[in-house]
Image 1 (cartoon, rainbow, N blue to C red):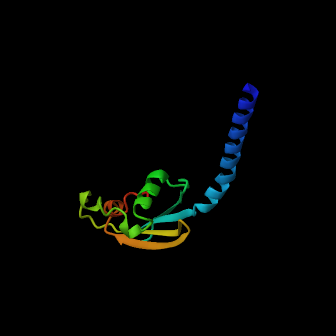
Image 2: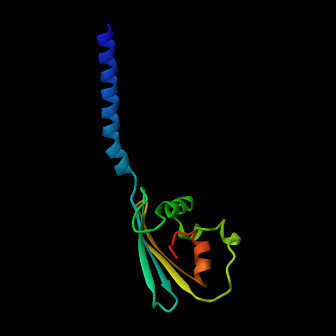
Image 3: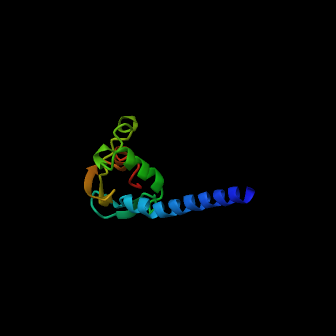
Length: 134
């Protein structure tokens, strides 16, 4: 009797493990890829830096990839919706030192082409919720 119970438990565990392994690749394939190139350029275009941001899972060359992905997730991948809650809490000087930000790539499989110019890096940081490493 005990051997039958042990065999039944082992068979159930093996079946669950096989089902989990079989569903993992399908779930991974179902998650759309998010890969972005984020560019920061000063106003006269003499300085330009680029970084990559991968989300789902977070990675790339971005120094705070998980935080940037979380901000984009909250904004639904819409760069114009980034920082809307924080924007009014950020206090910046009125120094004019323009910075141009751009993002190209894909967000959850959808193409992304976005760029915007800000009066200075502080303003850009607040408006984009820190997605761009400035």
